Length: 432
Image (cartoon, rainbow, N blue to C red; front, side, top):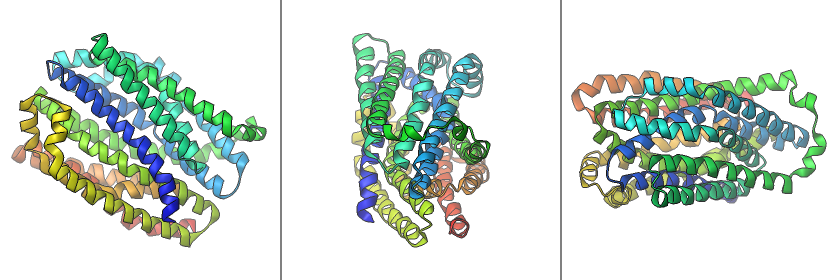
């Protein structure tokens, strides 16, 4: 079983690590310009798109869970219909996003605070990157479907290709054409479409035989659509809570001043780097637990869950030690502005404990998605964000200032894992 976990986890880790590395490169490119406003602009723009795209990440998670269960049931026809159904919905959502881009921009910058200069650059970033919507959501579907089919290799290559394109294009636009934050946005747009091309090549090369099952009536079957939307609505609410917490974090950082915004934007990269790394095991959990749910194999489902937590705890301890001793080195890579580095070091404790308090929530997410336990995911996230994160911040902010943001974030991550642990027996009884 460990071999099966690693077979799926390692390619996912490799592909996931390219995502925060891309964020690190973007921050580093801006951090080595002559002003902190460029870091702030990319950070605010990224938060807006996290809000938009993470909100629709159910297209990946729901597709992965449903596909894994169909794979376990050996139902090739339904596997292909899940892909077709998800691609249809992602295309419709993309069209809506582009049509409504101006209202989305207006609302976004009403909700997020920043200086006039930062906001002006962030708006320019937004107006370019919005055109990546169809490609970004399409990649969610393709990668989720590949993973549900127990194939982690294709998502890895697709993600690496897209992010390597992105890094190369961003360097070219920023360093050669001096486009600053706009160059980062344009590089992202072009790279997302190149990633879709790579994913479609893999799809038609290896899974073309599934097209014999194509049936429009099955794709738009009301019962299947209802199930798809019910699960994905819960995942959307769950993801909205995550987005809310990170948006709140960035907005309150910007409300202090541009300097703290830049500091927190850099420090949050440590959390995101670990999150994408541990998600390699969570994604493996989606595929394997979903398969065992489809097979109705309770003992193997419980076994893989225990092993996922074993690997997750090892990874969390390793990252905690690395962050303890290498935080200054990483900060120096991200920016050469000494004032930002020195301020960031005042908050290094939060970076060190991040992996320890958060790993359980990521592992549980993978297990819950594989079991399509969307209701429990939703409820745990609502409890952690509304009952833990917000009260913690508002009670402590007048006393400890910016530290309150970080403490609230840590309590949010910890409480998610605790709540999911208590809800797990309900999932076992329902599925087996």
